[in-house]
Length: 112
Image (cartoon, rainbow, N blue to C red; front, side, top):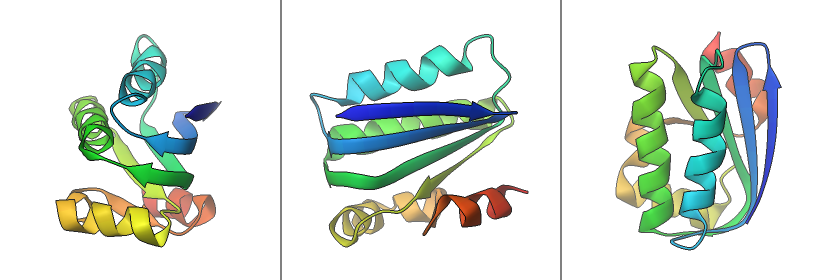
């Protein structure tokens, strides 16, 4: 999986590409945690529009980062889930906890 990281003011953008599974979940955790530690991040926008597959390890990593950013009084949203990935998010109940948007612009508006 490839991870592109961008920080604008207090919002961290993570753009993922590839499969989000047991083999890549630790890479995701590290990328997020490296930017939480000592940096003022209030919001996390997770763009998964280029994620082709997600399993329970990926879901667990997302939920753990959600919990961590909530403890920091921040918010997290998911952007651009493809139908097959969105279905997994729906079946697992993630969409009941974390808001899902079609694009980054809508996500930014939702965080304001």
